[in-house]
Structures are given as structure tokens and as C-alpha cells.
Amino acid sequence: MATKFDAAAYNFRKKLPFVSKDLLRWFPGHMNKGMKQMQRKLKSVDCVIEVHDARIPFSGRNAMFTSTLLGAKPHILVLNKKDLTVKSLIPKIKDKLKSEQNIQNIVFTNSKDQHCRGVKTLKPLLVDLIKGSNRYNRSEELDYNVMIIGVPNVGKSSLINMMRSTYMNTRHVLPVGAVAGVTRSVQTKMRINNDPKIFMFDTPGILEPSVSDVEMGLKLALCASLQDHLVGEETIADYLLFWLNSHGHFNYVEYMGLEEPCDDINKVLIAGALKFNRIRRTRNYDNTMRDVPDLMESARTMIKAFRTGELGKTFLDIDMLQFDKELDKREHERQLA
Ligand SMILES: Nc1nc2c(ncn2[C@@H]2O[C@H](COP(=O)(O)OP(=O)(O)OP(=O)(O)O)[C@@H](O)[C@H]2O)c(=O)[nH]1
Ligand SMILES: [Mg+2]
Image (cartoon, rainbow, N blue to C red; front, side):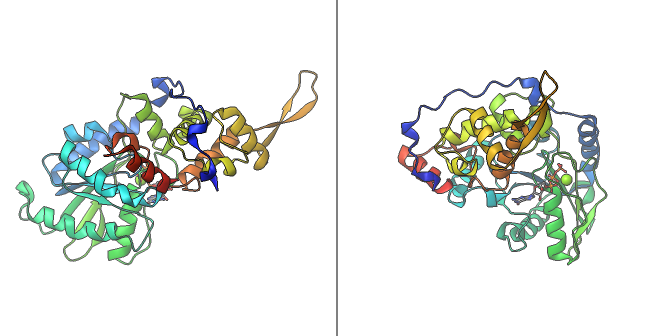
């Protein structure tokens, strides 16, 4: 078991790996266009569901949403991919979001689980919120329109697919994928319920045009809200290693074929390349060929293991939560690892 290692016995680096902010910025044309389409759509919408990754509830939400799309309509914050984080922290996370950001409607979901309680509570919650709101120009309309927004790859399309298959008994229709930027424009509305008639607009994932904080950008990259090649797979893997070591999560040791924790990303990636046979042929100066560990492929393997939960459940924003005692924090981290 990876937990046999004692973090205190290692002198792990305290400083974040250096990454230029420019690498963490991704605002292609479709995001700019999508944002404008969403603003135009807003007047035909009765409720906005903002989806975000449950592993980073305090990092990386798009502040442009708050200033342009939220406020006038009922708002639900869905923290999705709850299967990849730890349940015991949910009450603390909700308290912090309520008290510090005045977000009252927070639902944790797993959009891949047909039986997820969060997904089931979403429909009655949004119906109640719409009924209790001033619908202005739409007060005579019997149909309810909901817009789903969020940064890329958090599961917006998956959530609509799951709601639709739960209440309409139909197959999934919206394309989803493990890379950021699958949905490229605001989609035509999809019916997800018959009585009352509820329609959902899927929208492209949108990041802010500039990154205010490097670590926040790295967390978004690790959660695949940016495309990996923009930041660099080895850089993302290095941040992952930094985070895992500084939080005592050592499942990667066995996974990457190491004997003990290691703070050097090159050594970790070489071990992983040898274990998973990620080897590539390269030409020497004298034109002969040799085999070398493929560090980029090894980095991809490590990142994928994190994203699928094979390295354990993680809560990347744990340092932003207040714990009464350091012991409580360590107990949560033990449960996560
Ligand atoms: N583990 C887990 N994976 C999920 C969950 N919801 C979605 N995914 C996966 O996350 C990836 C992104 O899902 P999408 O539904 O395409 O995300 P999106 O927000 O629509 O992405 P863009 O359209 O690119 O902005 C896919 O590989 C999904 O299978 C979840 O609750 N848990
Ligand atoms: Mg999508």
C-alpha cells in the first residue's frame, strides 16, 4: 500500500514548478463567440446551471459568468465528478461557498451514474427555483428553459445526457469527450422532461481570457479544462507530482513502478516509461538507432491515472478549506489517499 510512506521523512520541494502564465491561457475564437451567443440567449432562459469540477470548487470558475450571465436568473452551482473527490468534505465545501460567495444552491453530481442522488435532486430544485422567481418577459410561458454553463470538460454535456436519459428514457445524444473543447457553440435546446416541459441549452466550455493565478491555471490543466498539449504533458505531470507529494498521496509510487516517493519528475517518468513500455526509437549522431524512455507518453499515462481516479480520490483545493485542527486536515487527506 502506498500509505506506508511517511511524508515527514522526505524533504519535498515547497515551491510550485515554474510555468509561464502564457501557457495557461486559452481563449480560442469559439469561446469568444460562444460567450456572445450565451449573453443573447439569456433572455429566453429561466435558470442557469453552472457546472464545475468538484475537485476544484474554489478555483477556476469563470468570473466573466458572474458579471454577465449570473445574477438576474436563478442559479444552481453543480459540482460534478464527485466520484473523483471525497464525500466527507462536501458539507464544509458548501458552507464555504455559501458564506463567502453567497451561492445558496449547490448540488454535487456524478453525471456518469444513473442512480446519482445529486442528478435526481436537480430537476425538483430547478422547478422550485423557477416557480419562485420573477420570470419577467417569460412569465406566461409554460416551458422552462435552462442554460448549462461552465469551463471546458467539467461534464456539461454529460449532465444533460444523463438528465435526458433519466426523464425522457432516450439514449445519450450530445457528444462528450475527455479533452477540452468538445462542444464548440451554443446548441439547440434539448428536452429533458415532459411535465413540466424543461429544455436545456448546452454551451461551449469557456475560460477567462487571462489567468490571474498560476496554480489555479495548473489545477484547471490537471482537470483537463485546457488541452494538454498547450501546457505540456510533462509540465502537468510535474505539477501533479508536486501536489501529490505535498499532500501525502503516494499511490503514484507503486503505479509508476517506483520503490519510494520521489520529487524528480524525470525519474518518475522514466520509471513509468519502463513499467508501461513507453519506449521510442531515436537516431544517434552516427545514424545508429537507440531506444529511449518516452517521457511524454509516460506523463500522459500518469495524468490519465489521476483523471480516472486510479491514483486515489483527490481534493485539489484542500488548502483553501479551514480546519479546526491540523489533525482534521490530515484525517481527510488520509481518507483521500
Ligand atoms: N468521473 C467522471 N467523469 C465524468 C463525469 N461527468 C463527465 N465526465 C467525463 O468528463 C469528460 C468531459 O465530459 P463532457 O460532458 O464532454 O464535458 P463538457 O463540459 O461538455 O466539455 P466541453 O464541451 O469540452 O466544454 C468526459 O470524458 C466525460 O465522460 C463525472 O461525473 N464523473
Ligand atoms: Mg460539452
